Amino acid sequence: MTRSDTIRDRIRADILAGEWQLGLRLTLGALSERYQSSHMPVREALRELHGEGLVVLEPNAGARVRGVTVGFIEALFEMRAAMEALTARRAAERIGPDHLAELQTAQDRLETHAARGEIDLVIEANRGFHAVIQGVANNPYAAELANQHSPLLGALWMRFGYSGDRLEGVISDHRQIIQLLGERDGQSVAQVAAAHVAKAKAALLRAMRRHGVDAP
Image (cartoon, rainbow, N blue to C red; front, top):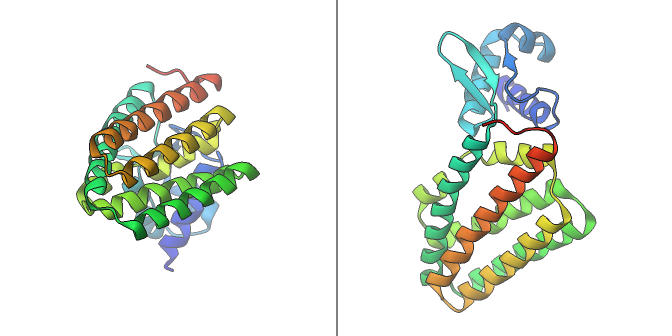
């Protein structure tokens, strides 16, 4: 692991923990001092975090933690809904018994973490569940778009929290997706996948508003 990798991971962890607030301007001087590094590794770390969606790089203005508005969340989830529907439909055409077993294993892992209240691991397991479907669909371009800004969304879920209702909804939707994929019902599973993303959007926006984030 390079020096920039280490700094990237530390900045990411601090953003996820709320040490750097949404929309906060990040200066090379402050980052270099905090992480005891020269400017060059910090610049490289910021470029990588920009690719993850956690940091915005602005010409002649430096970097800042991405500010999140309602409009941004809506646009992001609309794109994810389209890509998740596409990959689910394609996966229904290609899925086999081994894939279904892998998907069930991923779901079992998610439900175990949910029962224990391990939200960070629920988020990770959720990505694993969808990664199985994306792998079966074998459309890397759709997967790349669907996963765009996943680290940022993970940060937002950790910051604003999953409700118990949301966890129950995720589990229920995933079980239905597994059933429909097993039935090779591409049209229905695409609809459920899109609705699943729409529910996530609504839940995240509600959580943000509970914490006073209600930007236009």
